[in-house]
Structures are given as C-alpha cells and as structure tokens.
Length: 87
Image (cartoon, rainbow, N blue to C red):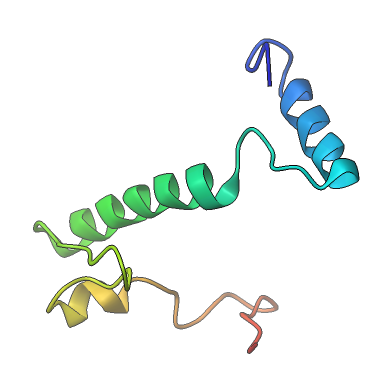
C-alpha cells in the first residue's frame, strides 16, 4: 500500500480489507512475500539453535540430511491450554 509505514499500518489493513471484498491479491501476498521471507527467518533460527549451518531443500522445506534441525521445525508441546489441532 502506498505510504506503508507512515500511518501505523492503516494502509496495509485497508489493502487487506479491499482485497477481501474484491478477491484481488494483496500488496503483501502471503504466498509470494510472507511465507518465503518467514521461512528464511525460521531457518536462521534453527541454524543458530543447532550451532551450525543448515541446508534447506526449497521444494520440501526440510533440512537436508539433518534430523536434529528438522525436529526444530515445529513444537512438540505447547503450554496448556494451547494445542496444535490435527487437520
């Protein structure tokens, strides 16, 4: 949205609501911007936690030959009462 960052996110929220009504893609599309940028941050966090470089397979989004790193891709337990639903 134009003026992003200048109005506390109002432009971003307006674009999101407009896209819900029009069925158009938002400026900050989750598929092309949100997910790819967040997976890089998560990968860096996993690398820091295992204490070494990790290699991510871009197709599977799994760490190549690295069960220790792959175990950190999700939380096995959440604090009560939170839980990850089975889909």
